[in-house]
Length: 298
Image (tube, rainbow, N blue to C red; front, side, top):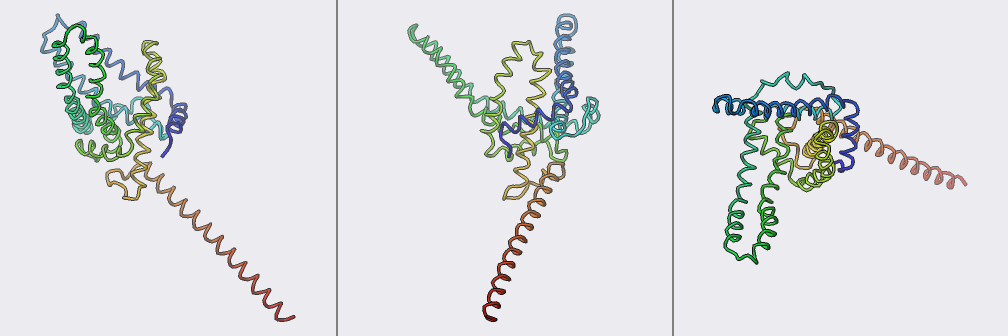
């Protein structure tokens, strides 16, 4: 499996070939969110609240499903496959319910795990109100770390579920629910690697905020998601080539062909090395025989 540095270097190389498309993919999603925000600013107070809420719901659901297609295009970019902006909409309606269902199923489980932190927060607030003034400052200092500790299960599960979007994008035969389970299988033993990979982009995210999101659109966003697409490909290759055998759901795409080709090349190399050893042994045995014959003749 590639190291974090190798993944990021490969993502940069892939982006150089299709940088314009990568930026447009990011720009389209952001513009759609901004358009929805502008619509709300104009519509609220002028149109019926139910109508506004219905429009918001439909647009958000469409954006969630569209995000799957966006990740599919970033996977293509990482793999060096040609893509273009209109490919984003080519099969938008195809298996729409599967894409939306898989994403909503993932969000649901993340929220379930996040709910664990609510009782902890309620307890912290209760203790804050019950303590005297001298202890309230200490309570304020402690609430933040306590909240973070309570969120650890949700963070861990979020890492386990992180490949769900990429699986939905890259494996059309995997069902919505199975995508979540498959993500958990792929991330077994890889959660720490993904966590460190995401943390390595913190500086870029801060710079994006300082540039009002411009840097995020033109560089950081495409770079980040192409790198995540590469991480997905790497854990997928690992699942295909581990000793336990490849999961059947991961078969049939470009990366499997590459893995098989690597295995064939490794077998050929081993065969060549074995033949070289045999030839060397034959030469040594032949030399000994000749020496023995010469000694007999003398």
